[in-house]
Length: 507
Image (cartoon, rainbow, N blue to C red; front, side, top):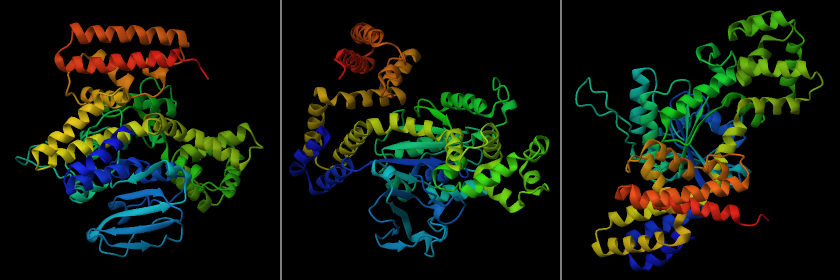
């Protein structure tokens, strides 16, 4: 890789401190893509982490562990380590339920973070970083969270609501290792959601928030009242999809997309929480008179307290795993197909959770372009290391090497990611329609999506790519400011390369 070659070449030409930084950049380039999962307190982050990993290992109840950054990465042996601020490490046994213990049995003030190594295939390609929750509805929790993460609001006076996007050193160092952010929101996107998202994306190795390295999910989609969303027609999932689209317009251009998901159902279905005993209990519920069942499903209290043949404790267990929406979905699936197996019922619940769409988007936004994201993050780190050098000659040497690298044709993806970040962050002001086009071309891996013509035939895609390449070249030469022109040349080149790729004979 070009950035790796640059680091290798420069290591002998810079100070020992800068060379050590380059060594860390090289290590990161060879490691899996690191994705930080962030969000407000009680947004269901850890539940979603468990679903993504496919194992219920991250504690979901508030405890000491949820106050710390936890890194889930691949290992040949399952183990958990407490990493202290002085560098010491202590092996931590799993709890009886197979999860990381909620209480650690050590002085939490001396803990830097937790490292969890799991023999899990998902983690071979992606390290997942579970971060403490930010924000809360009550002032006490806000204050406590801000103290933990260092996201304290600096006020000129008691009435100033201006927030800061700063993180404390521990969180910054842990999250700075991430190249991407998966941000979890619930029904209402608040001002502090945007501040928190800005804080976490700014702390990633790529330094800037943008659709290249951030997506969001609307969790707990089943709790949305469909009658509160215009156009939902009484359908919960349709309501969640409409609300997610509205949230996407609020959070863009910081995120590539907002997708609805039901983390609780996803966790239960994907991590082995849903059992054959649960399927049998649901069959018993499906056999109840429909009027009785519909009454029971009005609320959790009625569901667990109603007198019926299914024991109250069993119903409580189902509620904890699936909530009312999941129970209702499973009962409907059983009534449609009475002979459905427990495995097929689990898959039906997984489909209803929306997890697969989130995984596909993670694959498109993160995994498919992991090398480009990591290279852009590495280049940002190299630039930061050079700026931190006290030697002007060293700074110039690294700067010149970066310019030579970016001038090479193979570095075009880095140029495109850089242009995308400049436009997304507002550093380069572009008309809204052109900004949207830059974001679309730069933040999608699929050619049809890049061109805004998903599913179109190859001939139409090729003609459109060539037409837009010509338009952006003309704009760069005759209608753009100098800053816009630099971006336009990159977009022109992107369209031209897409045109070439479409014209290549299909294998």
